[in-house]
Length: 276
Image 1 (cartoon, rainbow, N blue to C red):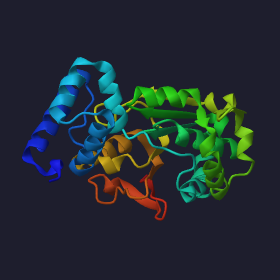
Image 2: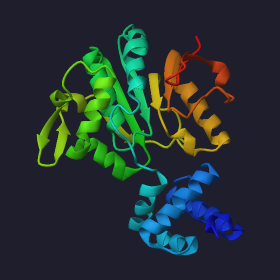
Image 3: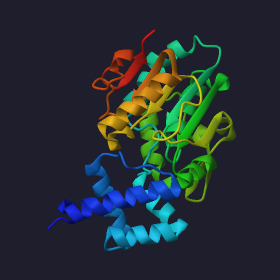
């Protein structure tokens, strides 16, 4: 029998998430139940625990164990120029509007290990916008942020990332943006200097800047409907009039309580524009 189908598993999961919130102030209590169950079962198997109660006891006693669990709970999976048509739409349809601003603030919410932030920095560089842009890349996972700030990628993923970049309308060889080492590459400093990597929780933190573009992709699918509405409210408060919101391929604001504040701008690529 699937252990996630038992009432005991549901009760233990609620206790675990409540304990994490009280001990570490990370709030996963309103994540979508089905995906949270899958994530926690995967974490149990990966970390070698049989039950949630065993895991909870260890998490409360051992901070390192908690941050190991956090690696599973935050699902730090990313890639450069993921869904290339999204980045092409930004380049061709959104950036012409952004060029009318004397300075720009862009927020990559849930940046994971930084691939999307660096992808945007490359696009901004190629459209002569990077020098007047501040990119805020935020996440709740300190290990992911540490990796993102280093700007180092495994050489094994470069072929796929290069293909994504080309399909997104890239204007130069991707190699122009990194230096190569043995089995890894590092982004050049000109990309990093305009990116601020910082801790921010979409669940518990408030707006920290007025922005012209928010890119939050493949994060909200893990939230329940009420939490999605809350986060869309946060984005609405952060965006300036006529600002843009980019979401993941399976995400939309159209059925949210905040939908009345937005127009669909590029349907295929899930880009919305805040009303004036």
